[in-house]
Amino acid sequence: MKRFALFFLGLFFLQACQPSETDLNAPILNIYSFSPNRVSDTICGQLEPDNVIHLRTDDTLKMNLNLIDNEELAQLKVDIHANFDCHGHRSPTLESWSVLDLIDLSGSEQNLELFYVPPTDAWAGNYHFQLRLLDAAGNETGGSTAYSIKLISSQDSIAPEIRLNSPQSSLIANRGSQIFFEGEALDNMDLTGGKLELRYESPSGNIQLAQELALTTGSGTNYNFNWPYTIPNSLSTGNYRYFLRIIDAVGNTTESSSVDIQLN
Image (cartoon, rainbow, N blue to C red; front, side, top):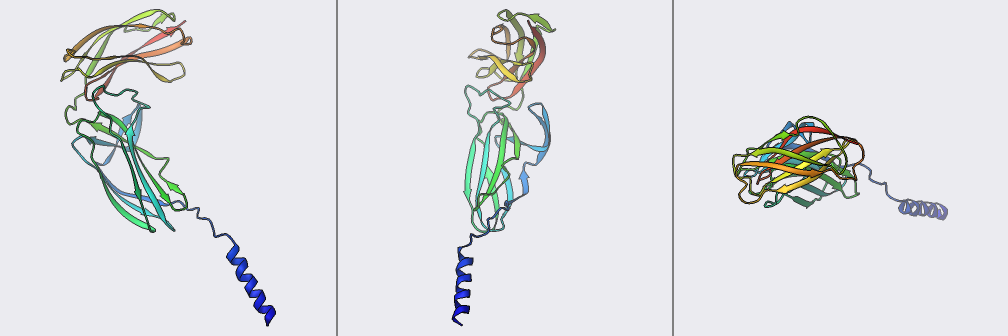
């Protein structure tokens, strides 16, 4: 009898000392609704089907979420930030919209209704919007999925125009030589506080900022320019696609036609 008691006692301690089964199941993030609704739009030159939210600065981003885990929920992270990978500029007078909201969770299921209001003077343009859900074991859902928000200024929703008059056709140039970009920018409101940019696409396909010009007081609604640019000696040989970008005082952006420059 004593032997049987010792056997079961040993079995009890053996089971107690074994590590508990690791939770490898990721939590579930159910998005019941977004308001405004997601639509298809082109962001940074690429179509994003049913992934873009058009939001005015006098509106509210609303979402209804259902969060589930097989054991224990831990945290929801809401991250909204300017898409600087596509727009490498900021308005000299405005701030971009930024949200980093860490919401602690408990239990195995929660329903959330969240509201986020952009500042009325926030910089217009493209933003990244991401939801990340963590459970108590560290499993994650949503980290690889990013939505796009196209923020529209309630102060001025009309994008400026830009015309590149010269050069208009492709040309061959040497590194260190100077080229003049001549044209005009037009807007429905004074361009003061905006910016003019010259950008290029390298032979490898990377978009780079070549130079920029802040539009100061007195720029008006019709801004004429004849802008000198010296080609850096550091650039390698090959074909470069140059274009201009005009950004008005609230962040509305328009690109000009492009010109190919073959560097020797």
